[in-house]
Length: 218
Ligand SMILES: [Ca+2]
Ligand SMILES: [Ca+2]
Image 1: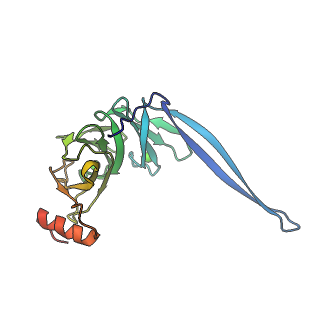
Image 2 (image 1 turned 180 degrees about the vertical axis):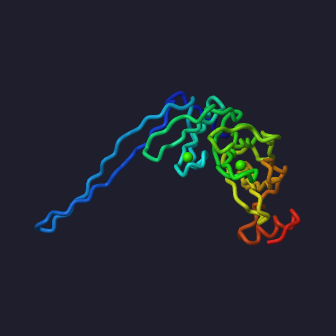
């Protein structure tokens, strides 16, 4: 039976900032190192779980995306490159129930990073399109009802089809398969996608079989 992931606390994320100090004595060749860490606590939504890192506002500094599982939102925390974070305008953003995993990719080809979210305990994958400032809104047809069995848990994005468009992979845990879903390059998933055959043990063979089904070549 699948486990329902629920948390009541905490409602923050912790970032540990560290520095390593290396010392060498002038005499005797004694060497030592010390570690200096400080903790930064950042409030987010209820039931924080999956975390992803990407530069969503395109300022060259990494930002943090947190899935708030118990309230169906994602918190977007913009980093200043010095270990400090502030919520993006409009954060947190609604992303449907039980966000369990996050992938960051440009789903509509506008150069701005977007979010792809697996909504576990539901059949859905949610796509939120970014405007390059840290704000997000749902893609036109989001959320997308997949055939994952019993439901998605994890999600990743890549140009798996070699067509220049992002494709989404998610698990189908109940039948020991992976589901590959192409997109239209405008932020929308093209369903139902194709399952990796459970009998397929060689990656290249799998890719060829999937490409044949989808009418593309490897
Ligand atoms: Ca940034
Ligand atoms: Ca985009």
